[in-house]
Structures are given as C-alpha cells and as structure tokens.
Image (cartoon, rainbow, N blue to C red; front, side, top):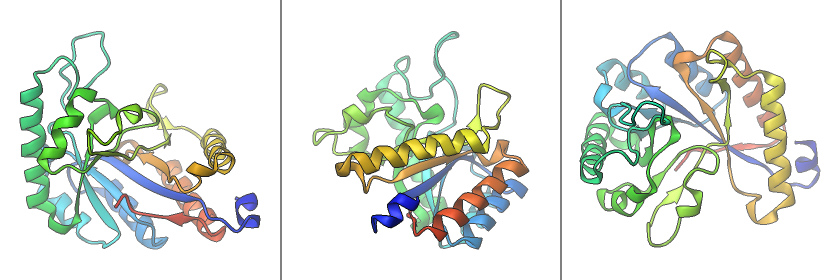
Length: 239
C-alpha cells in the first residue's frame, strides 16, 4: 500500500458477502461494520429462502447492494462431483427458469437495492448458461478467482466480476483463514495489479460468509477497512 501511495495511485477493493437469508446478529454485525467505515457492501441473497427480516436489515443502509445468489442453493451434482446448483448435470431450461424466478423474487423484495448480478452457489456454474441469462436481465456474473473469466466476451454480453480472496478456510472446519495468510494473498493481488498496468484499476474482491464468521473474522474486516482507507485505497460497490 505504501508503494501505491508513493506512486499516487489508489488500489480499488470491493466486498461480497454470501448466503444471506434472514436477520441475525452476524449479518447485523457485518452491516454495522460497513456503516462504521462507510464501505459499500454487496450481499448475495438466496431468493427461495428470503425471510422478511433480512429485507429490513439490508434496507437499513444505503451502502448495500443486493445480488442474486442462485435460487435454492441446492446441489444437483451426483455424489463425488463438486457441488453446483447450476452445473452440467441439470437441464439448461430448468436452470434458466430458476434464475428467472429467482431474479423476480429478489427484485420484488429489494427494489432499488437489487443489482442484476448472478452469484452461483459454491462459486460454480456451467458456462453454457452465460449466453442465456443476459436475456433475463442479468448484466453480470460474480464467482471466484478465474472461474468463467475466459468466457467473458461480446457474445455473452455479460461482465464477470469475481472475488479474489476468501477469508474463510473451508477445508479446515470453516474457520477464519488467518490474518497472515490473507495479507499474503492480498499482497500478491496488489503486486500483480501494479506490475500489469492494464489491470491496475481492476478491483480486488474480498469474499465473506457472515453465517460462519466469528469474532476474529469481523475484527480482521475492521482492521482491513481502517488500514486501507488510511492509505487512500478506494472501496467501491459492485455497481
């Protein structure tokens, strides 16, 4: 961050939180931190599981945008395969119907907060869906790391806005990944963008899942927001 500031350029970050369905102390904590540091927050909501309470808590802040997180967050892949709600094992027309109905539910529930960005559960979906979902009013897809990036083209008419760093260690009981490991990944992303000038304005996406976060995860986010803001970094919405 010091090198970026010395070069009079500002790195850009954004944050996406997944699996929102209802109100609770953890989603409230996340929204509170967003407000405290005046940092935009994109929340991926599961359409079929929306409860009225989550509509109220997300409408409590003008820093929030709501994204569509699949439909039911249900796995359809056979045993032994990586989980996916919108993978190769399903009929494409059934998947299109689910995305369309899910978009309608999200739009009706959140109005202006809703941004037509599709977030596939488990950050995994068939690329064969991409040419179809733009016709449903979906403007982009947000997954993780390099997933689907190579399919972003004029034919699909979609932007791919992926997150880059997940703060949860899913292979180790869903615990906090740890400050040292996250900062290592963050440093790598910053170096990559500084060295490749064409990507210097590409936002670095932070991925969270409030439902499995504990005190150390929330504390890290506060420290991250505070430190990056102090160094002049910009936090933007997915918009």
